[in-house]
Figure 1 (cartoon, rainbow over the protein chains, first blue to last red):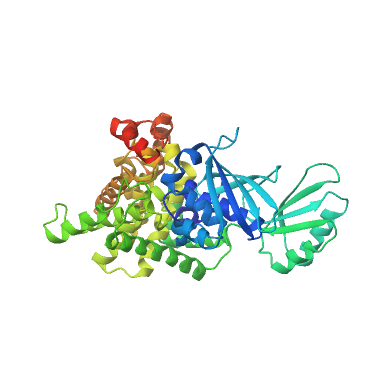
Figure 2: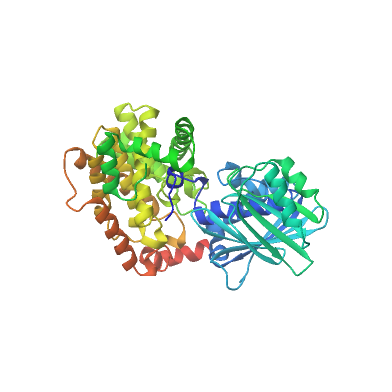
Length: 223
Length: 290
């Protein structure tokens, strides 16, 4: 059983009206924003289940788009995220869609970046503002963003895990959880590393420069 | 320093001769590894958001996202200022403030989930009113919030604060119980009295269903926040006078959980039963999501 912090009971501090339909939605958008490295041109949200049925009344649309703009769940700009996105030249659309056997509050976020690349992310808002990301670019994986989370896109080659963990050890960062996912042997893969400590930008740069690493993103939802 | 049941909390308070808020702050230092001043300043931020949400709800023209609610908090406030209040000024202020925070939440404003977004008005409504009537400083309110969080923690741990699991009794019921216990501590009551106040609160609304119109955190949520604020004040008044809950706190929490489990899914936030399933409720749902 979990030891609740008093700030989990009195909190989160958030923009209303619903922790699952607004705060959680914003966090999912923010994860996508981080993974897209902020250079977003166009975004499409496929809304499943309760997200699809009730997104207008709950402001789920504004919260998702707010996340895409880099806002946290307690950012008052969320309520004007449509206007802000237009000003920043980001086009957006919301489509109700059955995404199959997934949680009732699930969204697929499809991002077209300024450099022409696309990224798609599947995630669910599972209650109390908490989220689970279950797919990036068609690869099934799982992380919640509750911890400081490092996502590393890499090529599935021997020694890559040792190299990344050595860099973290050098910076005295403790790994709490770590999982590896791949499209196939020797192909594109993702490492999900959850840590107890904050990770500085320079550490991510070191990792990005390592051989066979394609990219690295930090997606903690608590800062 | 930790506890998982109400009786354990009381034992800790007695052993160390400390208030509930003191036990909570020491517990927080243990589990989060942060120092006291960091905890206090973080709680001050929450308190400020609560104050701002109430202020906004009573001064600005609020309209919820769906258009279903907005302006009722102001109506209650204005009447109590211009005409003789039915329940007295303390009560009318507490309920209008609770409604104000809930309206701000429904209009995509900033609030503190306390313990949930749907019950976010009860603690701010009652606490800010208490501070006005009794001249409490922020330090006292912060202690009150910590004491309130102990009750919320016990309910979360041993039952639920989610309407989808336990109905409205779990959401606004938990918020009212938290508020009542915090008020008792701020008024100088004993830890035991705080738990009696929390127990009385939950018992008063045992069985309350969660049946939001169109599934939105708007109606009847706003009025239930008003009732929750009243419930907290009434229960604190009784407990401070020495009125005891015959059934102890831990058993009341267990009961609330059991009652919640007995509720059909239609009455647990699905908008398939209760007020949501009335002809008017269905018509409004169709209008909002057309």
